[in-house]
Every structure is written in structure tokens, then in C-alpha cells.
Length: 455
Image (cartoon, rainbow, N blue to C red; front, top):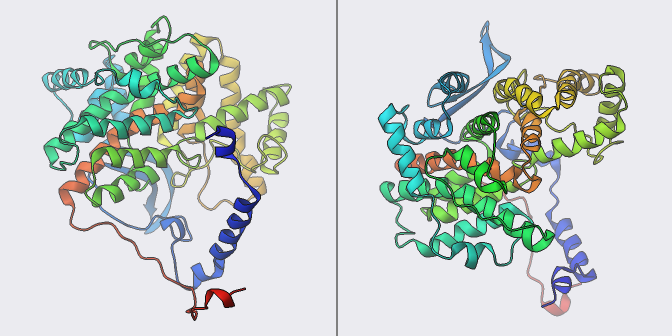
């Protein structure tokens, strides 16, 4: 079938889509009437309690005189403050991804010997099946690397003799293999697309067992495999900060839901990837970079607070960028006064901008971080405070690292699969019932009408 015809939206499809839309509209007042938590959140934005977890904790409030009030955000992995974890491994000049992955998966910080053994285990799994790159990744390369990644994950099911075994040792083995392979699947997928669609040279570098996950990402991505110590360190920190974020984010909740049906690991991770791909979840940092690209052209003086504020007001008034009325990278569903990941990240971002000669751009980001909450407060009621989130700086970091925009969300997935794996094993350990929330039917009963009597 011709691809143009395959993708064509015909008038009949438009008519049927409108019919489907009309039949799907639900009066918004009914959600209030029946006390339905839209998006599994109450009117104050607090998530509905759907489970318990030992893996991580997201805190954005504190109790003052018996009242919950907004506070600076904190993120904990297995009870450890992420700030302390990052401070610990950076102080000792270690890469943190493997160390923190061990913590999330097994509930304890590794000893030197345990960490060394764990790194060796991950490196041993960092090999794709024979001809997988040629037969799977190189064929029908997609412009979207998240689709490529999901397809590769689902295909790996066919290479696993114990694909459907949901015993904990087998699932752990599968998860560790996928954690090790995600960088290869993502970057090889990008290289194939870049070669066949953009005519660029094709580079397929093999990973090196002595390198960390962050170092291997830069090694297999770049034509000359070179990178500076600071580049690798900051990418490693980005992976740690994106590794896990509680059980309630969309992709992690998807992992719990799919796991509760006792399906296989490959299907579960593909579903989580499908969730993360969405622009409301994993694609936000791309929007931040694109927004700043336009801002840098529209604003003449990047140090002029009045001019920058004027542009931010234009964003809110749907007069600039994508006319969505949003300042991307500002605000979060949980955090109010600050996102701890953004706070931790910012100091390292400043160092990288100096190395890259982009301090002027970094200063503009810092100015927007300062002004955006003021501009938003001037136009809209703010109940819990607003601050920049981790996406605000992560896209800028990836841009400074020279990562193609197509890999921004896959980099998120390379980190987050560790959290997904921990939650999958936690769900299997405590699994008792399939997750099945209730939906209240509101359609009125109707009498069947013979086909000849229908209008």
C-alpha cells in the first residue's frame, strides 16, 4: 500500500471521528456530582491513594500548626534524599547511575564489592542478539525514537526462552538486561534513522565494558566517541535525577497496572514507553528548548527583565511560540515552591555552560526561572506556588551535550526504566489483584431499533 494513501484522512474518517466525538462528550458537571476524581486527582490536585510503595517518596508540603502548606520539594529514593545521594557520589568523583540503580532495585546502597559486581553484571548484558541491529533496528526506521525503542523491546520477547515467566528471579534478569540495552536500542535506532532519512554517515559503535552507562551513551553516539569528564558527569547526574519519581506518575502507574495482569516484562516496558512518549509526560523538555530558541530570536536584550517579562506574558496570552498559553518547564503537578531535581541540576548546568561558552544562554534561563512565577502570578490565581521543574534545565543540558532532539525522551526512558523495573518487581511481590478502577456509567437505557427504522 502506498504510504500516502495509508496515512490519508478521508472525509468519511472525519465524519466518523466527529460522530465518535459527539457520542463521547460528558457533561463536566457530572464529574462534580458523582465526586469523580478526574485524572485520579481531587479538586486540589492531590492524587488518589492507589497503592503503597517502598521505592521513592515525593514531598512538596509540610505541616505547620496542623495545616499542610507548600514547601520546597524533596525527593527520596528508598528513604535517601536524592540531594545526599548526588552529593555523595560526586564528592568522591564516582558515576552514580549504577550505584543508585542498585539502591532502587535491591533496597540498599552497595558496598564497593557489590557495586563492582553489579557493574560487571550490567556490562555482561550490554550485548544484543546476533544480527538484531541489522534485522530489526535497521529495517523500517521510525522518525520517533520512542516508537523504535518500544518496537525493539517487544521484539526481544521473541529471543527470550523464558519470556512469559513472571517469577522474581526471571523478571529481575529481564529488567537488568533491558536496563543495559536501552542505550543501545535508542542510539542505534537514531543512527539508523539519521542515515537512511537524513543521509548522514552510519556509526554503530560497540559499548565498552569498562565505561559507565553515561560514558557509553556518549561513546556510542558520537562519531569520534570522545567526551569530556564534565559532559559524562552531568549526563550521569541527569540519569540519576530522572531515574524514579514515585508510583503515581503516568508511566510508573502504567507499569503497576500492566504488571498486575501478570503479563510479560517486554509488554510491560513497551506500555510504559508508550506512556512516557506523550508530550504531557516525557516530551516536555523538547518544548522547553524549542520555546527558548524562539525566545532568543524574539528578545533583543536577554538581560532586560522588562523585555523578557513581556515575552513571557505573550506566551501566557497565546501570542508567542506554539500559542498554547504555557511557559514550558515552569510548574509541576506536585511541586510548588521548588523541584529538588531542578535545584540539584542547576549548579552543574552552570559549570557545563562555562565549558561550552554558553553562559549568556544560561543566564537567560536563570532570568526566566526568576521572572516566570511573577508573570504567572500576575495573570492567574496560584494556589500552591509555581517554580521551574527538572525539564526546564534538562533540555538545555542535552542541547549543550550535542544530543539530537530525537533522543531527549529516550534518554529519559534510559533512566526511568530503573524505576519501572523496581516498581514491576514490587507489584509482583505484593500482587493480589488486577488493578481495575471503577467508571460510573451515565448513558440512559435505550430500546433496540431495527436497522430499517434507524435515522
